[in-house]
Image (cartoon, rainbow, N blue to C red; front, side):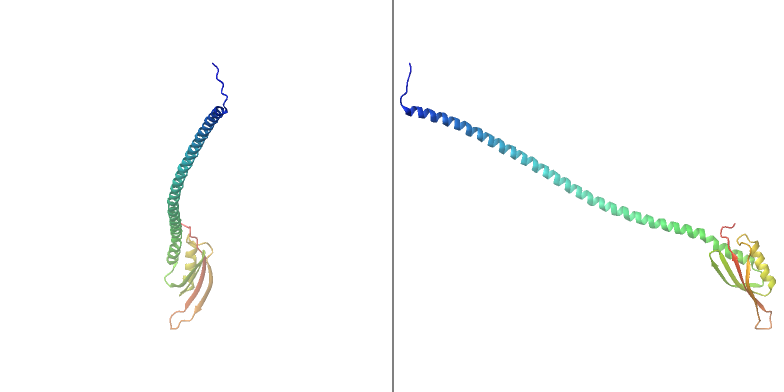
Length: 190
């Protein structure tokens, strides 16, 4: 049998029911999309927050490591300065040791060359030039002194007599000869 509904009331109920069911499915779908969106945004926020915390920890660790390394760098610089100072001291000591033998040989050779009747009053060294001043009782003693210096391996030839003057004796003793001699010293002679 065929039923015909002539009442418009039922038709509107059916339409409303269909509209209501379509609205419910749209609302449910919108709610699901909203919940999914909230979940995605929440997960994204959580992952960014976790990454931010990890980066903050890495930055803090890097800052601690930087501070530690700066301390190590300071210590290395102090050691380098100390090493430089010690190296300079060693170099100075070596130079002093090398230069130490020259004056010893100079004085030794001059003292070996002195005759009995001669004494020195002053000896000056400027570079390799040596000026020796003194007094003696005879010109023979002076010439013996000069020839002895010339035959020495530590003095270059010629050894020059710069000045020699006779001083009158204050007493009735012999007169003295005041002299000045210039020689060139060879520090590396053997």
